[in-house]
Length: 189
Length: 260
Image (cartoon, rainbow over all chains, first blue to last red; front, side, top):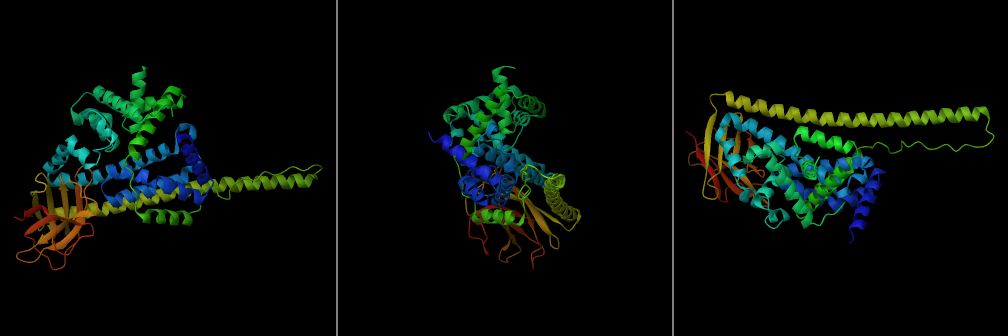
């Protein structure tokens, strides 16, 4: 009911930030840092890495506010998409580093990581998603969306990991997001 | 393109999971002003906002303080670089017009210069940070290689114990260079907790060798500095402890391994 007001208030704050208003920046941070940090922490378990990413995301908000285009989506979406992208970048760089360490030491260690991540129940439990909307999705849809959203895999990588055709993965992701959209009643944004 | 196909592309794009070719196709639609593509993307992005909003988490207070300090220390593009309109007045002399023109040109040049210079400053800042990260990474890799090459390096396999039997780890240890622990299959530590590595020699008390956390996939690594007074290590073990670490083990043991 108040969605329009909330979005426009956030958009006003972004406009203020674009003018260099630090008060508006603080208000935007106070209102939305927990939203971004919650997602970043679901992607990155390391609290220090998550803090670093959060700071970088809000630094980008401060720097890039003049380029925010309301016709492309809400400020929250602008923030959340940035938070997700930066956190996934960080996750990939951590993984690259770990693979460098693991590969010469023991291939089985790397294999063990894959085995564990393949267990959807365990992965969901790890992320504390037990009561979330993702949990309401059928397992295969949830798993495909989690691998994309929280682990940064491409659709081909997901297909290879789950041993399923690419087309099936694409369909599952679409159906899963459609169902979530219905759960959250997201209409034409 | 069918509606389903468009929605598949939009869903994958919102999740950041499209492969290069599909991404190119969808971006071409967006560039071409395809309203259905834009609408589908906006809807899926808003859906992901709702997914994220289900689990907000308050960030540590020092992040905001650090951001505000960074903002104060860095002048931003655009501030003070706005071109003020010159109000034309009737019956101006030729010199007034010339002077006004020159001033306008000068201000415009300053504004453009400031904008360009701030863009380069930002780029330089980003490159500087990138260089620092790469340098640190190189140093890390060099120290790993040095440890791997030295025949005096001990390699110890750690196996998972009762709390997490599927966990495993490898510890490389060199008394002068320190060591590296790489662990996999550990459950993420609960809030306020972290894993702590211990080095045990003979009957001596365990020596704390550092704390580490694991990512969502259960993997973590720890670079261990040389431990004063510790030469050869007989056992390495990992326990779950308060996140700042403790001087002597108190929590459950998750991993342990004896050196050969």
